Image (tube, rainbow, N blue to C red; front, side, top):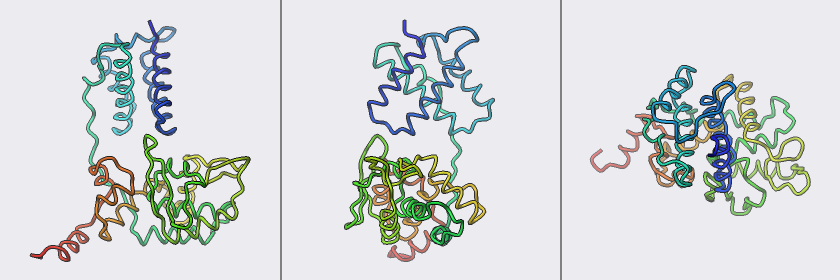
Length: 298
C-alpha cells in the first residue's frame, strides 16, 4: 500500500509535467506538506488516503481556523487536497474524492484597494527619479512600467525572456497560468524604460530572462515583491503595495476610461469574464458619466 507522503510526491510530479507555474507548484507542495504533517502522529505514520473520511477533513479545517488563517488561505489548502484526491481517483488509488464532500468556506466579498491613476503615475515618476539611489534603478523602473503598463502577474513578469519582446511593434509574449500564452501591448513609457534597461542588461552565460538580479540570473517573484514594497514604502509611506495591486490598477483604470470588460479580460489572460469583474472597481461617479454619455434616455 502506498504511503501518503509518496502519493503526494507522485501528485506533485504529475503537476510539474503539466507545466503548472513554479509559484502554484510551491503553494501546493507547502499546503500538502502541512496536510501530511497534521495527519502524521508523533512517531507514527499517517493513515492511507482512503482511510481519511469527510469528518477527519472537517476536523483538519477546524484546526486551520484555530490557527487564525485567512479564509482565502484555507480555501487554497482545501483546493490542494481536492486536487490531490482527484489525482488519486484517476489513478484508481482511492475510490472517491472525499474532499469534495467538505463545503468550501465562504470568502468575504472584498474589493481590492486600488490607487488612483494619479497616485500610480506619481509613484512611477518618482521611481524614475532615482531618489533612493538604488543599485539597479533603470531595471526597477522597467519593472514598474511593465507591471502597471501591461497588467502582468508577477510570475508572468519574471518569466518574460528577451526573445518574447517585439521592440518594433511594442508587444510582449506572456506565459500565463497553465502556460497559456497571450500577447500584450505596452506603451511608449514602458518602451523607453525597457530599451534603456536592455542597453545596461548584463546576463550570465546564455541567460534568456529579461529581468535579471545582481548576479545576472533570472529575477524571482519574491525579489520583485520586495522591490515594489521597498519603493512604495520609502516614496509614499505605503508598505502594503504589491505587484498584484498594480495589476488591479491596470484593469480598473482601463475600465474607468471606457475600455470594455472583454478586452480587459484578454489583456489580463482570464479564462472567465467573472474573474475580470472581481479585479475591477468603478466609482459611482464613473458609472454615471458612462451612462450619461452612452444611454439614449440619459
